[in-house]
Image (tube, rainbow, N blue to C red):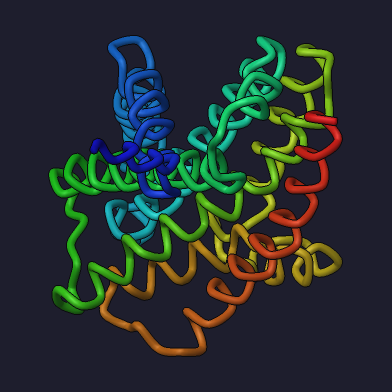
Length: 261
């Protein structure tokens, strides 16, 4: 007497996330894609060093300590933008609709994408920090603060990726999407404490600068790397990251459901 073979259960969430993440890793860390993750931050670091280092040193400002967090944030913005463009490409190729016909966990695609975004953010942050070491950048508050620096950077990238993912799934026109992603990034960076203190802005603009999420994250990174990791300088960044992630995670989920209907 033979027994019937046991039914094969479909792969679980972990398997689905691993398969999708491997696909995104190959695309995000391929030879061409490494330009955005590694080469681009190095290029901007060299440009800003040549343009601002002497001026800042003349004013008694440590270039490595002051500008490095700004360049980290800039690199993270490009990671989030690239993630949205990747989502738009997948949407246009019909990948999402094909995945709906497969027995995969519904949350696996988003989880895999966030893992890859976090890995890209970590890579960019480490690369910029290592190069900035040559310009005098140091973690002066010990290993715990350095880990906090990396965690804030990754959290900010995940928050930004949630924002850009909503755009990537909502805008079908590639030109409109590129404009919506690239045009705001420079004003957000300039109208912040990234390059000059808030007190040097016009009085009417100072509240905007001080309450900007970009300023909050840059100030937190400076505090964690500069030896002053007080709660007052870190909590605003954490709150911004959490708020943006929760709200735009919800809007991204809604946009994804519309795309796959």
